[in-house]
Image (cartoon, rainbow, N blue to C red):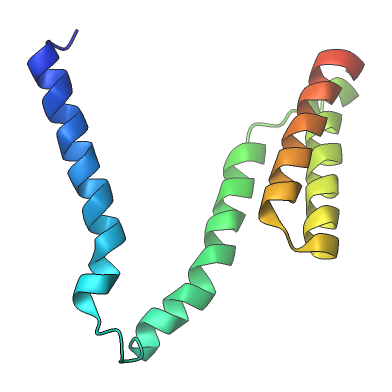
Length: 109
């Protein structure tokens, strides 16, 4: 168990790290200059790579022994992909997929 001092220090360190990661681009690059090509390249490549890693992480432990173990995952994933493809709105896709998955797990399967 953390003491109050340790908890406060932990929160302060996490807040500082979060702030610095948000402020780093503004500190490193001039507002008038374009970012270097490698930064623009990372901005194009990393989002799909991170999403792919999250999908693999979420679906890695699926068991196909019976439909109740894999069907909610597959249905919700297909709905998320379809919504993202149609509307291109991350919030709508993720929220709808999460609600659908919870309904399928709690009430259907």
